[in-house]
Length: 457
Ligand SMILES: C[S@@+](CC[C@H](N)C(=O)[O-])C[C@H]1O[C@@H](n2cnc3c(N)ncnc32)[C@H](O)[C@@H]1O
Image 1 (cartoon, rainbow, N blue to C red):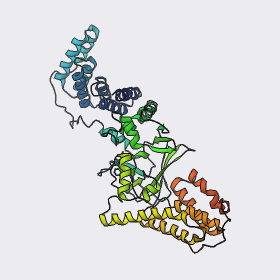
Image 2: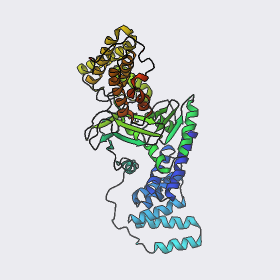
Image 3: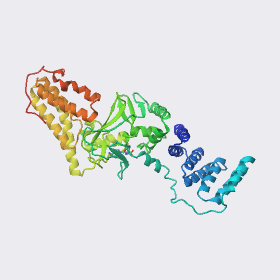
Image 4: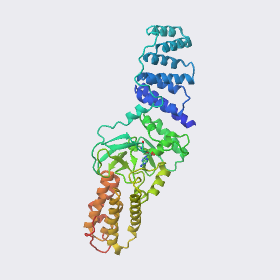
């Protein structure tokens, strides 16, 4: 497992950097990651012992020193660090025994004399100052995990562990309105996906990880890994984490936003993520009004794959791509409601295919089909992608020289895109011109003149 070994070494090196910067919490966590990848290297528990001493986590420091000594008996640094930990724990007898071991092992007169001198300051018998709680040696990550999940000030959400199988979730902490910007962040790990083999991708991810700050590497390694138990990327923890949490940024790039990737998927999402190539930010906008305490979910599948497919089909896609069984509010509907939901979505999909097939002399039917589709989506509680239909309506009205109707539909398209992707997004910019001037549609005014003002949503 050479690459697993690399990651452990990287964690140790970044941990050392954090330690030098006096960020002992991050250092401790990175040594824990290193240890979880390579549990037989004595340096990792030894370094973590030092971080634990700095954090005054004496019991854990003692446990780490003992672990080091199991792997490497007689390791002097481990013995000395355990002396410090045991003294602080009031285990003077054991501390003094360790100190004797250290002095004997050190074989250095000056060092031995200094150690003996410090020994004289401590009682020989134990006194009872045991810690208030006995640390669970398996729970090393608990504290860092909590730190990561503190909501940043000013954000309208918090990431919290849920009691569902969805793990961490984003919950609204303030009332959010449709079109509100929920999150904007720079992705930290960006990989070119075009023609990449798994091996190339793996190397690219490793190279990105090398460039991360200790804090970011630590956060990355805390992300969920849907590939921990499958054979997709054997022994490649970083690749598994990347595959679980990355989103397409552009046609040939994927990336991870360390906070954005904590938002779970829903088949009727109330938020939408997008990437703004101009600013280089990942953004999440609200698709509907969201109440305090409500979970904020985005969609991992795009438009028709989502609103036009049955639960079975969506679950199949999500499972093959991301290895999870969707438990969103739509997929958890009782049978009867599920059947209704499925039939609505299948119908919308059929209507979507039908819309462009109407000949020019059936534009009224075409517009009515568009209205019917959007109403079905609304009935389904699906609040996105109406522009898949409204843009078509704007074009066909302009074709028949009904610029008032065209503007009505183009405005809906523009407003949808502003709300879902932001006013400054390329998606909104794309339709702004035709909204302001429907005559600028390429086929405008080339069909039979007709009025459609009676067909509205
Ligand atoms: C990008 S992460 C999202 C954040 C994740 N919940 C966490 O704890 O960090 C994707 C993982 O979240 C879980 N997840 C997201 N949406 C889900 C859903 N609708 N149903 C079940 N699990 C979901 C799956 O384990 C998936 O692999």
